[in-house]
Length: 78
Image (cartoon, rainbow, N blue to C red; front, side, top):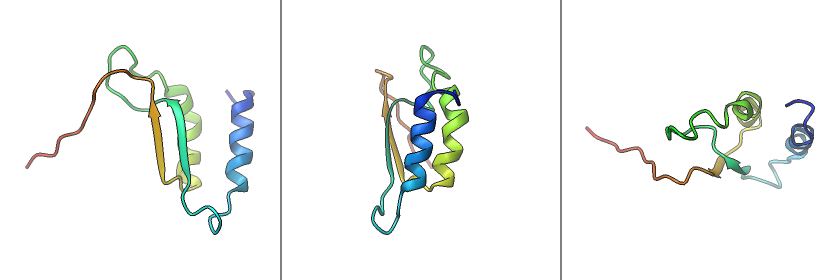
């Protein structure tokens, strides 16, 4: 994955972010890192292993992703 063009491009883009000009860092991607759908389970694992640490390091505020065509939610209960 490190030889992939997206790897190099994303690293360069994250390094260029000036948080005084860009207060919100938003990532939009197709495949989700996390889901519990059995058909797509661990599908984004290779990308998660590479990019999740960057998202933390560069303080990404929110990630929007899709791909899984199934409804999923977390329910709060006492």
